[in-house]
Image (tube, rainbow, N blue to C red):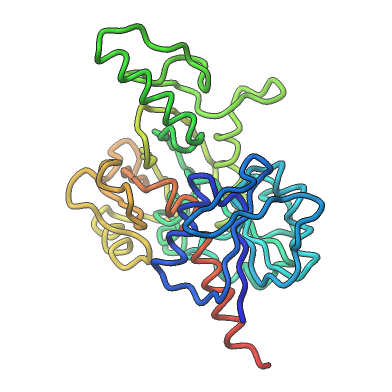
Length: 332
């Protein structure tokens, strides 16, 4: 009998996890949603939400999918693991821990073998990038990446989507925009050239630092140079990325297309993929693959994916599927 906990089940990613577990016919006999005190008495998908407090019963879970923020993960993930669950955490809490595998299901599933009850999901913008670039790295190596992200507001949470909608509605009706509360400037009809937060005087945001660190950890190559600018754009769902990749050995645009056409999780876009096309889909869309005429070993491409699905919930569920398959194949 397999029992699965979904922690943060009332949030956007948590709800998507529950939807995906059903859509993908995950072999769980029991699925239990957990959330904070604010959700006491609530239901999600017809299931009563359990509150994470000192009385919470954590016994008997095989897998726990977390999407409740880093502070909740730090407080509760190891508790679930101590009670026997394998935790797949979507927050930033454990990504830098050298003892915790950072896994993209199509890229480095072998890393799961080293888990000690905790597995980290990468940041959503890193996630889609790795699906697109891992086949290239395996074939010819990657020397340097230059990335500009165009990140949707749902990556910040439901309140950010509401803020975008309220500001856009007011502007379209000729009314003053509500003052920004989530971002430092209005996001409707605007672009904010620093997605994430500046920490300790760093001139890079935490979103940018995540991509730098996580790329090297997932691809298991500390020598890759990564230059990134993370940008917030007025899009509800799906992140886009303009990517320039400098390879160690020559690779033509045609060869790159052939590699990516065979790559798991990738959909080659015949035209320019857009967030609206990617929303609600699990693939990573890659298009505009072309030679960088300024460098003999560089290519440029455009990468788009739904940040709530493949960027978060889908990958977590795919990892859970790998864990379930391994469990089913293990001797009794």
